[in-house]
Image 1 (cartoon, helix red, strand yellow):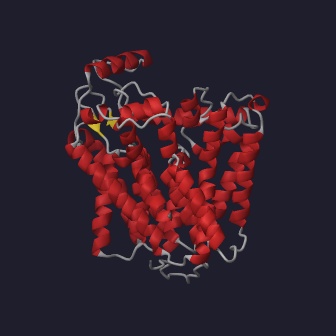
Image 2: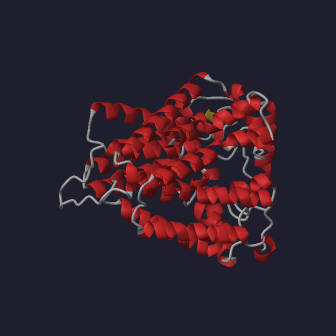
Image 3: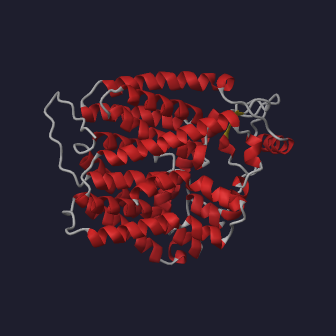
Length: 444
């Protein structure tokens, strides 16, 4: 069941969009989309029933329970007490959102009692990433953007999820890299996630695992495929997170190779970003999209000489602005507003978005400083626990926590389940004591 969840979550978005196109909509599609929660619940019940003994309570377990308790308490507090405006549906969506990592972690802790094979989760992660890479590269090579415009994806986003996008005929605007020239927009790899960001972060986690393995030619081929796909997502935060994660891996494993690969990746990604307008898969805007983009650029004061602001300027400023504004809101309202007042959940339910993008500021809005502190302490405990048990996972987890500064990482269901499940599983293994200078790599 865990394998079905890990691989199935990679296919979830594209499958739901296809069902919408086939006419499965509304409540029926909501029920179908709940397969992941239902399967996770069944897995927890089955494993709990079969486990003969519970794992010894660790510090991370206590902190996970504390974080879950904070979230549940904030769910129970009436919205008007804290000044929030979330709907009952928004509160439930936010409750699921914040507790998914806890459920994944709990399942990992229980499975660890009976499952002592370290390499299987890493293999599932690599398999998932290979699917993302192959599908994504084939898509930008052979499938036109117009085919996506005519698919069920825009309707699924707008009518089913309540996420209305205007600049690309209902597709998310970040599907296209805006070069600043209205005649030369460039496609980005979105793959089965229907998102360049989710695809990129999945590839980062898998690449860290691949680099952690003993050097073999097949790992080189897999790593090359995954890295090429990562480049075509054109996600600079993921490039930086990969380099950071590989440096952490080099320290944890006491190996020079991951650090050398990190340095090479920084240079290669910088060169690719510069060359992308020339080598990326070109597409075109429709007349309606051009009209909207021109009006939006004039309103923002950024259009000049027939050119739009470049995506680097817009994206960088947007991320920093959202992080600063979210931090300000949390600082001025440390008690939080209650679940459902931040991020995608607030957008889907039509209430004011008090903070967005950053995992930490969204938690601060939904569950106050208590929620941020509980999540941060739990994350630190997990990182410490993973350090001598699974070096690659400690490095990947550190990269994900860094990405959380500018992205709602637990809002990406694959990350929220897979990474925290793997962490819970790894904590069931004994610590690996390593002498100075000795390789800390644990064979799969």
